[in-house]
Structure formats: C-alpha cells, structure tokens
Length: 207
Image 1 (tube, rainbow, N blue to C red):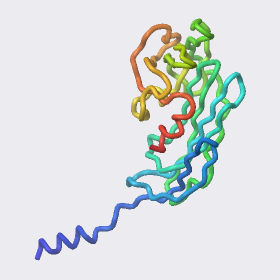
Image 2 (cartoon, rainbow, N blue to C red; image 1 turned 120 degrees about the vertical axis):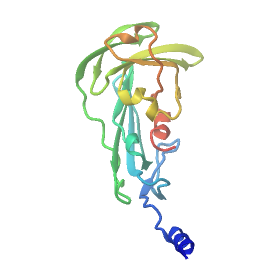
Image 3 (cartoon, rainbow, N blue to C red; image 1 turned 30 degrees about the vertical axis):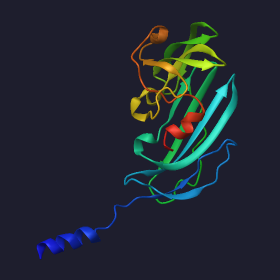
Image 4 (cartoon, rainbow, N blue to C red; image 1 turned 45 degrees about the vertical axis):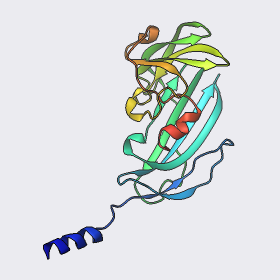
C-alpha cells in the first residue's frame, strides 16, 4: 500500500515551474520576430540582450535578441580595443513573457583609472584608458583578410571569465586577460572570451 502511494505521489507531482519567455534571434538581416518559448530549465529567467559595436566612433552593429537565461547570463560588459569596442547590455525578469521590451542602450561610461596597451597597426604601445567596469587588460590574435593581427585593450571581468564563455576564441586565438595597469604588454594568464560582434548574440544566452 505504501509503495502504491509512493508511485501515485511521484506520478502526480506537479512539474517544476518554468517560465514562458519571448525568444527572438536575429538573422543575417538583423531583424527577428518574437515567438513564445517554454524555458527548458527551472530557475531560468526571461532575458533581453543588446550587443552594440562601434568602430572609429561610429556604431556598426546594434543587435537585439531575447530568450531564456540563467541569472549569471544576465551581464553588463564591454571589450575595448581602442579602434573598436563592443558593449553588452541585458535586462532579465522573472515572470511569464516579461521580456517584451529590448535591453537598454549602453550608457555613457567614464574612465575608471585603469590603463592598458592598445594597438595601432603593428605597434601595440598606445595607452588606452579603461572605462566603466573594464578592470582587465586583454590581448588576442585575430585573422583578418589572411593576415594575423594582434589586438590589445580593456575588458570587463565578465568578458574574461570562462564561466560565461561558451566557445572560447570565437574570433580570436591566444586570448589572454590580466589585471594591473599595462599588464597586457606580454603574455598573461589565459582565459576564455566573449569577443566582439556576431558570436555574442548566440554565446551569451541564446545557445
């Protein structure tokens, strides 16, 4: 009798509550349409993320996406190479279909006193003033048009954390992050990376 009660109890246990969220993954055109999705994991939130990239002071990318997200995937971060920088903003919430609005635009960041080297062509001796929560120096090697280029700059802790990286080196190899002014003049402790433009839309919370 006790066994029968246990079996019925297991069968009739309510399903762990998961949220229903809007999902929107931009295609090549950058345009996406909201669809409703049941989150696969209990504890996930509804999230909206914006990836904004600038080059030479001009905005070159403004990509919005929505999906289910874990709390640690709701990030505010940036990576700045001087000639180009990318900012991630997000907005997460904990009720059904609450992510009906896009993530906020990046706010203006002020210099935080930390300084890193940045590159201008093959010279990597320029001084870059880090801004906002960019508290790490970063260096990476990227392939552009068949040429190997070294890029150095500032990055947020979240960008350098392996905890938020789902494919390390999406756009670069030999990626290194370090703490301390101008510490990216030489090799430093290797870390994962959420780097630059297109992969960010899928890496942060849309996998």
